[in-house]
Amino acid sequence: MLSSFTLAALDLVFPALCPVCEATLGAGRRDPLCGDCWSAITRLGPPWCDVCGAAPTLPATFYERPQRVAHGDPAARGGPTTEPLVGPPPAAGSPCATCRTSPPQYDYARAAALYEGALREALHALKFTGRRALSNPLGDLAAEQCVGSLPGGIDALIPVPLARERERERGFNQSTLLARRIGRRLDVPTRPGWLARIRSTRPQSELSAAERRANVRGAFRASDHAAGRHVLLVDDILTTGATLDACARALRAAGARRVGVLTVARVVHAAV
Image (tube, rainbow, N blue to C red; front, side, top):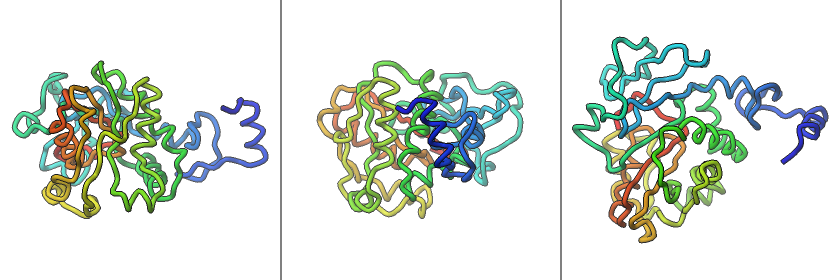
């Protein structure tokens, strides 16, 4: 770790630029993100649904008033709502209507922030332009934002595996980088070998929700090391939850006692 004096001296000679907005890093920086991009991320508050983690947004003005998250609302499929909360939210810790009628394979899911704006650009820079250093602030974001709502007794963090050819092409698995950073913050070991992708799948971004589920069905196999354990799956984004559901199913088949999900970002208008 560089001292603040050394970092300041280096910045004078080689000004560090934010990979999202290309501004020089300054006050509030979370290297390599600048302070403006870091503070622009829309955090998610405590979950209303204890299963899928549907949650209110926390405004950047430091959470003056929560926003309504239209989880499972067909009218919200065009994008996340920005309407103010009307009436009381669902009781904290109780399943939402979607999870009561069609529960996922995992026991609970938590996400740190909305998949939009600066966070979306940061995740794209991490995955597609090789800015691996971004896994540090993004992993910290997930840990800092979600640690209070994670249950205790987690035995291991398991990154969602990439297809072998995709990881070879990219040079790394972003979920593994994130899991290792989060694991250090939570003091929980990361076990990438406990879950493997056993067949190639099409990129999920090209598919509808139903196609995503079919695409990843049976695509993963878990190790017997997961048997009897409380494991936490780590990924960058929760969209429909299809990939994470397939991973959780494989871990259940291997005997995992409890399966949770932690992601940096969430597409709130997607039904999971």
